[in-house]
Image (cartoon, rainbow, N blue to C red; front, top):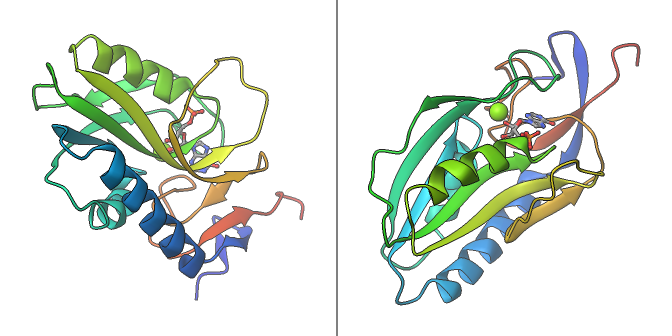
Length: 180
Ligand code: IMP
Ligand code: MG
């Protein structure tokens, strides 16, 4: 059993059963909203890969899947410059784009990707994040579909990482303070 990552203790925040329930609800809502639309889902790598894999199996309409890869956290828990690593391959022109993120913290990543996507002239653009942190943001960001709103804590598991570790944890954990 994993009890620490890089010497930092982890504590359960959201259990996998709770995540599954929420993901299935999100899938149902998205299915309703995108009936008769030309849905293309863009997953933000790497963090969204587990959430995306579960979510799309609850979306009961034909959808295309593509990915964008950006990097924002260079290491550890400090936010850094956002960089486009791999751009979207599919053409988005005239299509209904749903961006899927693991979590929204400052909103910087979503803001960066939004510019990129809108420059490709989609018919519509919406966003979905499993987790959104409750905090005062410098960037005013709208997330159309949110799984969980949490306090401003660093989390790991279910795709999210601490310095690239812990993505394989089935539940979502918080990281205890370094001295805690
Ligand atoms: P933002 O640009 O500050 O909104 O951060 C978004 C990205 O940073 C997410 O896609 C995550 O990959 C990463 N991130 C932000 N907060 C956390 C966290 O608490 N744990 C792990 N990754 C995080
Ligand atoms: Mg990340």
